[in-house]
Image (tube, rainbow, N blue to C red; front, side):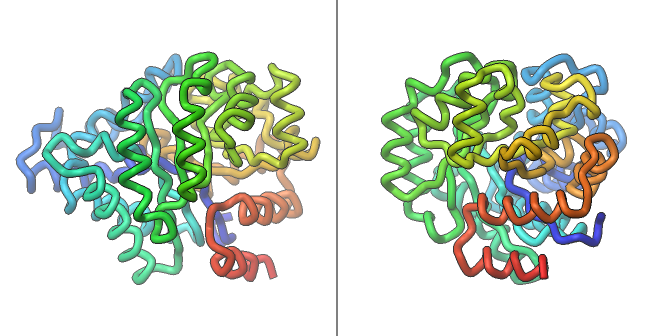
Length: 329
């Protein structure tokens, strides 16, 4: 499984930081962190086995974000994520992050985006992998933050920035207030993926597609609870970015055996497989693929179907998509 070509569409930058990198940046930049002992730090940066909810899961990002406040740290962490992915034969990855989380030390949103893109582009030169960036807005932040992200990222569309996302804690009916902002974003050229249906409300998926123009849905496991959402995802060919380990940890699903990914696929819904957060969830793409094969019966044919559907659903340019399809042959 490790040697197979892979594509990852749902990976958070701040949830995929090496613990030793946190220590090195903290020492380099004089940042106070809870411990400099790697084993202890890894435990703090990873989700507890008895995690009770998505809200608790999200607390694991606090330490990594403390050290992601300089151009150096952002470029390095993006580069290392690309390196880690390439080591397990990920050929293309879309990395997402919230730029406004990284302005505590005075960086502009533009500089934050530019620094992450530098890391991605430098890694593309050193490793056999290509990447793009999705800008995320946390739902509990104000609308002026979202507007700043949209406007700041506009100049980088086609230069590494490809999409816009909403993430963090999910409340029922969150989509309506974002309609105008996402209309503007689509007009600018952003592709749209939205975290929805992760924490219990299937209708949020329907709203994300119909109101915000989502082409992909982050997680979407609860579409089974809302008939219209299920039909919309299936009939419109919306791809679900599924992250099995994360879904267990956030209690979206109670066991790997009950994960709906292969049931969705066999019913004609397009799915992709991702890690969500490599460090927080202590996983990688190889592990996620092996879990789906072991517990959900993914066959070799299923794997290649998912791979090709993921190529089609990616926000990559046509030339990159053609390159990715070469690996099927």
